[in-house]
Length: 600
Image (cartoon, rainbow, N blue to C red; front, side):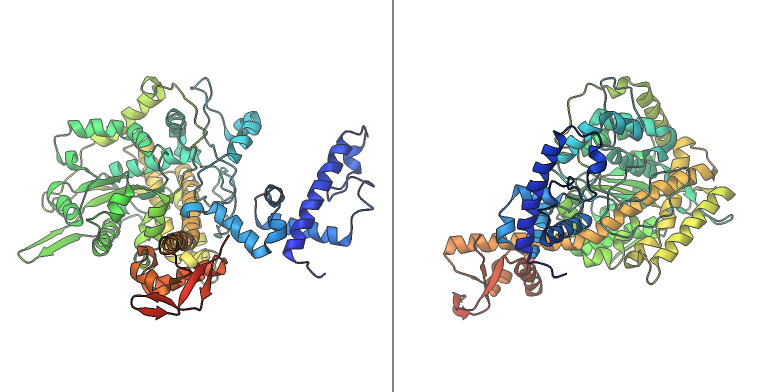
C-alpha cells in the first residue's frame, strides 16, 4: 500500500472523524435493541457508512491508529483543535510541534500518566481509602482534573502494580504510563504519609521521598547494613534528588516531617546540634565533618543555590560530588593545605536535595556528573504536580493522633545518642543484616539487575547506575526496618520485599530522568538561542545572524562554537532557521556563515 502525503492524510483523518461522530450521534438516537452488536469493530455503524468508506479512508484510519499506538495522547483531538495542520504541515512538522508543546519552556516531556492525584482528601479528613476504591468513587472527577494539569514532570517508567512479591519486570527506558507511588511499602507509616500529603496537599511521592531522606540522615549515625554475616557493612545514607518546580510546597512538606527533628536537635547537648547544614562550601563541609560533627545532613530546599551558587564552581562541584561519593561508600575523607593536613574516618553525610527541572537538566546533562558516575549515588524522584487541583482544607496535623505518634517516633530516632570512637572522633555503628528469606529476595534482584545491565541488556545504557542499585535497595530496607524498630538487628523478608518494590519505583524514575534529560536540555538551550536571535534581529534590523555573533555575544548556553552549531542543527531540523548565504557585516568584516529565522 502506498502511503499518501501526510497533509492529505491529516485532512482525511479530520473529515472521517467528523463523519464518524455524526454517524455515531444519529445511531445513538435510534432505538435498536442490538445496537452494540451491530457496530463494526472499527467504529463505523453498520450500513450507514459502508457505501462511503473507500480504500483511502481505511488507509487514513490505519495511519491514525498507528499514531495513537505511538503516542498515548489523542491525536484525533489534536487534529480537530487545529485543522490548519491538515493543510499546512507535513508529518514531521506536526509531530515536532506536538513535542514542542510538551517540552515548552524546557520542561520535561512526561507523556500521559494516569495517577495525577495519588492521595485523596475527603470531607472527613481522617478517611483514607485504597487506590482501587478511590478510582471507583471518583473516576470521572479524577479524569477531568488530570486533563487540566498545567505543570508536567518526568514520569517514572511504568512497572507492574504492587503485589505481595516484588515485580520482576525490568524497565526499558521507553515512555510508558506512570504507576502509583508504592506508599504501602512504608508499612504502618503509610497512613501518616497519606495524612501529611492530604494536609499539605502534595503528591504522596513528595512526602515519601522526603521522609526517606530524613530517616536516612537520622539512621546513618546509628547503623550500617550488610548482606554478609561478618563484615561491618556499608552506610545507610540514601542521597535523594527531588525534581519539582516552584509552587509544589516542598518547604511545607519538609517542615511537617522535620518538626520533631528540629525539636530534638534544639535540645541536644552534643555534636548533633551541628548536624544539619544548608548553606555550605566544600571546605566548610569537610572541616565540619572532621572537627565539629561526624554525621551531617545536607538539606537543600533550593538546589540551585547548592549546585549553581557562587561557591560551587565546576571544580568545587566536582570536589563536592567526589566527597559525597566517598562518604556514601564509607571511605575516609581528607583535606590538605600548605600548613595543615586533615584526615578522618567513620564520617557520614546524607543529602536531600530539591531542585527545579531546569537546574536538574543542567546538572544531569553534565559530562562530569553522568559520564564520570558522580550522579550514581542518588535516588531520583519526580512527584506529580497537584498545582491547580488543590482546594482549601482545614486539616490540623498537630491535632491528629497519627501525626502525634509519628512525631514521637521520629523524635526518638533523632534523640538517640551516637557512639563516638575516642581515637578517630568518628562514629561506631552496629551492623544490621538480613534474614535468609530477605537475602534470597535481595539476591534475586541483584541477579536480575546484573543481567539487565550487561551487554545487550535492557538497562545496559545505564549500567553504572543499575549495578549499584541492589545496594541502594539494601539501604532502603534497613531504613524501613529502623523506622519500625530502632533496635532492629535483622531485616525481615517482608521488609525486603517492600524495599524492592519501593526501590524499583525509584529505578524506573532514574531511567526516565537519564533517558530524557539530554534531549530536553538541547531543546531548552535551542529555544533560548532562537529567542536571542529573534531579539537581536528585531533590535538591529538584521536579515540574518552570523554564527560568530552567536558564540561571541550570544547566550551562555550557546557557547563555545561547537555548542552553537549543535543548537543550530536542532533548530534547522525543526525548520525554524535556514542558512543565509548573503553577506552580513559583523565585527568589521563580512560574514557568509549566517542563519535567518523562518517567518511564521
